[in-house]
Amino acid sequence: MHKKIYNRIKKYNTIVIARHIGPDPDALGAQIGLRDIILHNFPNKKVYAVGAPTAKFKYLGTLDRLNDDVVFEEALLIVVDTPDKKRIDGVNVDLFKETIKIDHHPFIEKVCDLEWIDDTSSSTCQMIIEFCMKTKLEISKYGAERLFMGLVADTNRFLFNYDNESTIKTFDLVKKLLKVSKIDTTPLYSNLYMRNINEMKLQGYISQNLIITENGVGYIVLTDEVIKNHNVDSASAGNLVNNFNYIEGVLVWLMISEDKKQNLIRINIRSRGPYINTVAEEYNGGGHKYASGARVPSYNEAYEIVEKLDSLCKKYKEELEGDEKDENK
Ligand SMILES: [Mn+2]
Figure 1 (tube, rainbow, N blue to C red):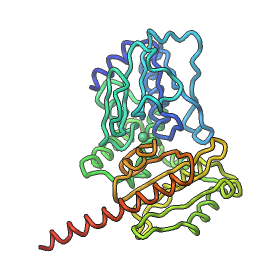
Figure 2 (cartoon, rainbow, N blue to C red; figure 1 turned 45 degrees about the vertical axis):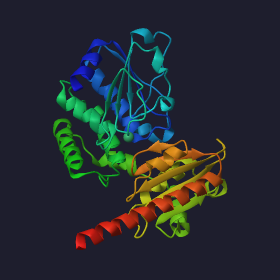
Figure 3 (cartoon, helix red, strand yellow; figure 1 turned 120 degrees about the vertical axis):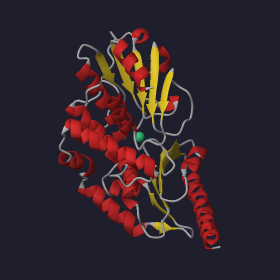
Figure 4 (cartoon, rainbow, N blue to C red; figure 1 turned 90 degrees about the horizontal axis):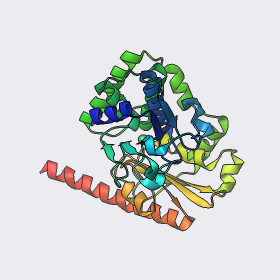
């Protein structure tokens, strides 16, 4: 697979790299990192990283606009960190001569001619690192920094929940990346974890008002009014979900944030117990087993989700107890 992808990159003079709407550091890091690495190895190629920019992650680098002289019929498209067609930002997959998908989400649908999917990988950035290590692509320093930031973000600073083998692979690839690129990680962490005081105050509000259900679902409703009073936007409110890991008795937690501009409710869910992506998928969302999201039309669906997550937790705890009893026999 690595070889096939490498050969296609080598073959095409015009390469467009796309990722999902509402990008996160893994999507942007993979996209911008890969662009830099391809240009570093093939300076004469034209490589574009496309999609709507986000002010919040501008430290990851700039995006390109596709000008009129791009001939899609002769170009290669690489889609990163995106399992389904409808979530690809900024390009029409059907226009390209050839297409490749590189992704670590659970499979949803076949979108590209060539698909490399590894849902045991911590991040798409990790897959790009692996790809470079296994091919002749030399990793640029700038590229290495983007990939490192994306991987750190998706693993939530290595607090991720994977099996032993996957974890060893992640650390091994990070070790190799640091060795070849000699990047300084300290400023990269400040990029990722610098927060403004308004977000911190909202985090305080969430801690004060978090509701915990009978079976261990922690949730908070952030109305438009609360979000406005704290001077943050609804997307960054939802992102605070990552800061509520490891609360005793809370297995699943979610932020329910109103987005008045788009007239919807954002749901950001995390888990350190049951798989939650199935519930997100029922509401037109999706993601990973332990980190998912959805956008729903009203609070009614949001409360339905809380209830479904609560019964997931109940089942999960019962199964755990069952296992323990079996072991004691
Ligand atoms: Mn990702």
